Amino acid sequence: MNDQTGRAWVFGDNVDTDQLAPGIYIKRPIAELARHCLEGLAPDFASSVSPGDCVVAGKNFGAGSSREQAAEALRHLGVKAIIAQSFGGIFYRNAINFGLLPLICADASSIGNGDILRIDASSGEVFNLTREQNYQAEAIPAHLLQIINAGGLLPYLETRLGVKTKND
Amino acid sequence: MGQTLAEKIIARAAGREHVRPGEIVTCSVDLAMMHDSGGPRRIKPVLEKLGAKVWDADKVVVITDHFVPAVDVQSAEILNLTREWVVAQGIENFYDMQGICHVVLPERGHLLPGMFVVGGDSHSPTGGAFGCFMFGVGATDMAGIVATGETWIKVPETISIDWSGKMPRGTCAKDIMLKLCASLGMDGGDYQVIQYSGNVISSFDMAERMTLCNMAAELGAQTGIVAADNTTLDFIENTIGARPEAQNWHGDADASYRKTLRFDAGALIPQVAAPHSPANAAGVDEQASAKITQAYIGACTGAKLNDLQMAAEVLAGRQIARDIRLLIAPASVRELAQATKDGTLGILLAAGATLLPSGCGACAGYGAGVLGEGDVCIASTARNFQGRMGSKSARVYLGSPYTVAASAIAGEICDPRPFLDGGVL
Image (cartoon, rainbow over all chains, first blue to last red; front, side, top):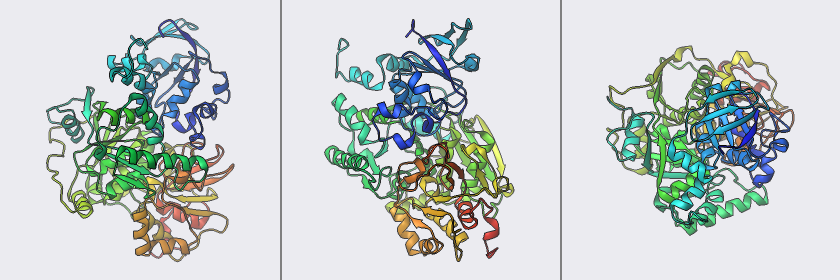
């Protein structure tokens, strides 16, 4: 993650889980559900987002439902990190559980749509290569970073419970 | 320094004397509740990958409410998977098509003051009405919890919200919550705990307290909580036949709160939230005359027995407007039985309401009663996000059961107060 760059997709405040994972598609496989991710706000998002890209938002990103498909859809589309001024609490946990990097960053509003970002996950530093600015997000506590680095809670628990070895 | 009620419960679950806000602690879970959408359907493959079983089948409650009754083959298969899984895991606390999980859970006596409970649904804060610390998690989190019996939590601060004075006729807990959504915003809870107190809260029955805690989710709080009192203990005693001990489950007098907010109930008027956010709430007069095509009384928030009774007070002897439909999905089978027995249901049906099965239904866009393009609905549910109840172009307003019923009569959003106590016919 440290050396990857990705483009920023910028959204506003209170982006909710019904926008991320609309209820009417919730029974569908994740690949199909993900095609509708954020379609109400950015119709081209799901079809245009590239692996390694970042979602940038204002306050309370992921508000609403506990449905973790909201985080899973972003991961399915290749999003690596979400940089927001704050997160809905359940979504924050779900994002970690799916190996996404949810960064709380007061300066998220300085990032423009399409800016190229590089992120240091361990320090919480965000480098905006387009604007030549650096932002300091709140560092993720070490044991939560372990879950993210493992790729999410499931692979983390697989290792912890001895289901698979580190070389798997 | 003393501790708040939430801090005391978390400390006990973490095996500690004290915890302080901001600490991350690992807690033993007293009870884990899940439903058919985020439950076995998503948890089973995770547990299989981990080679794990549920840590304690007696501490797991499974309730089907999202895809009931099955409306298509996919729903039927999800429900069958759920039924087979609880048998395989030896889970006896399984309630199939008995109503919405947040209402069924206390109705069947699973919540006691001081418990640390997780629910696989965002409206899990509802359980806080019983003096529990109960919060919502996603399915992978839940899988980890049922595999280990533990979860991590960042100890939240507590925000104290006091409502005092006399609630005006025609207002209820739902109006309080919409008012708070407008005042504090959808992130006003900042993933902290909201503890409700004041003489209004003391006078509320358990159903109204459940509405308050339920919609703490709409304030972005981790949970809501009301300290147990005689009302709580009476309810539990009537349910399980024994009176629980609750004296330890109160905040200390010298506990520290992030802030204390005080509201005057006497100034409250019926609230309506405009599309597409509960935070768009304002006095009903601001939205009055907006034409509707559907009125919906349903969900964990707004279709308990007391909610149905509020609607019946307004609808008694009246008819809904000819060009709209009023859909009613009682929150649980037991609540429906009570409403049948006491005459509430008869009033609603005589007024022209359509009865739907007990379940989450159209609130989350899952079941019967979803909205099409251009539909305008007023609902007693908790959230009106764009696209939640169906079409992205549908518009959903939120109001109390009184206000939804009055609007169904008028065919447009209107103030329920003139309809009460022998008002306009």
